[in-house]
Length: 362
Image (cartoon, rainbow, N blue to C red):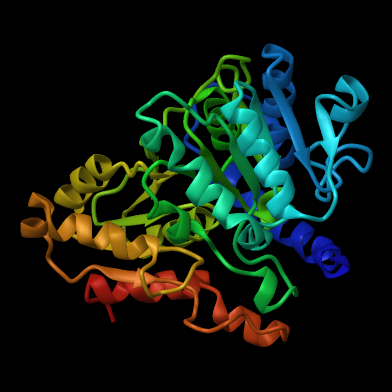
């Protein structure tokens, strides 16, 4: 577990770089305040715990230590042991407590220090949380939120660097959210806590320190983002780039660079993976006639694969002027060496190459 904290320096550098592009390219209107992703999540948790006495948070080091990534900073001091609960290192155990509490009428928020550790509790997530409402003929809702960092961090190798977006998105009964910006985090997390279905909320460790502008509306206590609604981060006419989580930043950076080469990219931030907003993607592809998907997870059976299938099965297929291309992580366990790690993850140059290939640019 100690190795998880080695990434702080690298994450700070990445956050600074991403912040520059988020400030440059954000399309949020009436912006009024800069807010880090970490603080957006913290404020959303604070407001929802304050709003509803049935909401409580549990997980490893979430209370007295303020969370491994300081997302839960100050909550234990404010709400005490009954609302903010430190657990032993037993994901199967405390995930089961959360699911049982949800069945009994409470609204637990279960933090996994990383979603890699959710594999210890996947039976609780899939077989208990996701299926109980159906198996009880609608009599037992399970309003639980499973949240924590997902995907690659930095320097934590194969067992701590997986993206579980496609794993959980395949399961009926779950809602799966994958936020990018601070606005996403506030609106989606608050919607997750208030929803009567189990929600898997996939954050990204390298994004926690990244700051985005947040509008007055998004800073409001009742600001909600509906599931199944993507956001067009940048409008364009030549090619559509579809991504979620940190990969949205790669697309925005690539789009900014391509603007200087006369290419106008439309960038779609999925935000919600299940349900998936195929309508926004289809409309965009019918306009641009080209599509590239970008994600940090593996190539085989990824989120991009599902997006491609939806396009192939829709009227948008007839509007394509080139095959859909996917930019993903390499199809290998994550290497530990920094040089190999960089090669295993999608970079801006990979997005640029895919776009130029799709548009038949030299």
